[in-house]
Every structure is written in C-alpha cells, then in structure tokens.
Length: 167
Image (cartoon, rainbow, N blue to C red; front, side):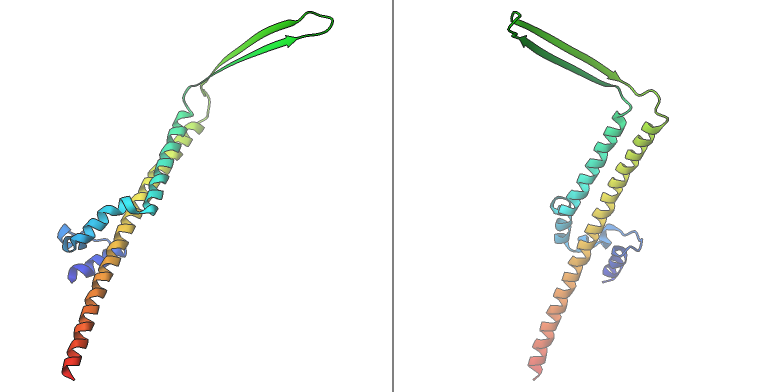
C-alpha cells in the first residue's frame, strides 16, 4: 500500500512526480476507464469548456475592433399624393449609404482590450486544466476510499465468521 499513501499525498496538493506504475490506474484498470470518460460525462467540465469558448469568442471580438468595419444601407419610399385640387402624384425615392470605419487614434485602448481578452482566454484554459485535474484527483480518492471500505467490510465479515466459529 505505499503507492496509496503517496497517491493520497499528491491528491491533497503535495507536489510529487510519479511513474505510471505508481498511479492507481495501473493497479485498477476500471478506474482508468472511469477517468477516461470524465471529460465527456462531467457537466461541470462541460461548463468550464463553455467558459473557454466564450473567452475565445471575446478575444476574437476584441481583435476585430481594430479592423475595418463596413456597412451598407439601402432604403426605398413610394410617396403617393391624391389631393382634391391637384392631380394624383406618385414618386419613388431611393436612398443608399455606404459606411467604412477604421479606428486611427485609439491611444492603445484597442491593444489593451485585445491583451485583456487574451489573458482572460489563457486564464479560462488554465482554470479548465486545473479543474479537470481536481475532478480526476477527487475521483481517484473516492474510488480508492471505496476499495478500502470494501476491503474493510470483507475483513469485518471474515472476523465475524471466525468469531462465530470460535464460540
């Protein structure tokens, strides 16, 4: 059980580097299958992945603020006048507009916004990575606790069985 003690030390935040044969997944292959599915099945991780996508979208929006913006507007009107003292008149009017904008002087505000969104994106990815490690670590601890409790229960039944034989 020395691997279990070292594993529990790591799961509570004490830094150590383990070989793959020292991880619980090496001894319990069913734990490895559970840990491989945790990214797909965990709603909390799905929420964190959505936060990463949101941060990347905000980064894209911030970088687009410095680019050229173009717009086009087209309108049409039909004016019909029927007055008693005048003839019937009908007019059609069409209006159009083309708008092109490019920020020239922004005093670093756009670059600061881009940098801020880049940092937010990196932070969201880091949070996802840390949270994923925490979930996997907690799963390992819970699984090993379950294995230990099952072993304790087996020992208790054997002890009870031996006690009944001894009577």
